[in-house]
Image 1 (cartoon, helix red, strand yellow):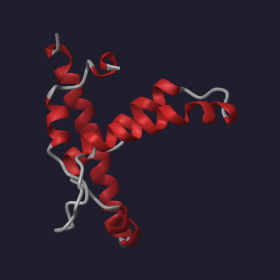
Image 2 (tube, one colour):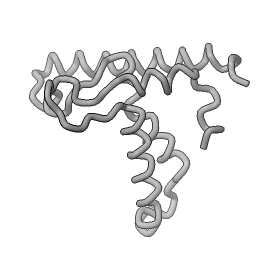
Image 3 (tube, rainbow, N blue to C red):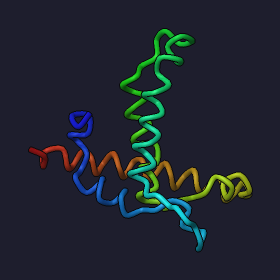
Image 4 (cartoon, helix red, strand yellow):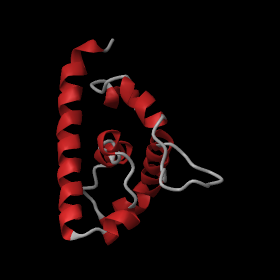
Length: 120
């Protein structure tokens, strides 16, 4: 799977390992970082693949794994925004969060393009 991420900057893993989920909560007995979370989501996607294939014959497992591993990458730029915060947000705040996420995705794409030539 390492080949899938060749165009990504090496700093991506380090950054995701240093960004913890549920940062709005002071007390938590177990809090994992975004790197671990994305790895776990990817494992779930892999485990569910046989079930999904029974319903969706054109299921792209590779794309699903990549999406699972990248689904929180925008949080490198926006920080961890809880689903409950998004659900309770005003239309204006929700629109602003959406725009911030879109901008983060574009910045991530641009960062990946400029880092493509830096890997071995």
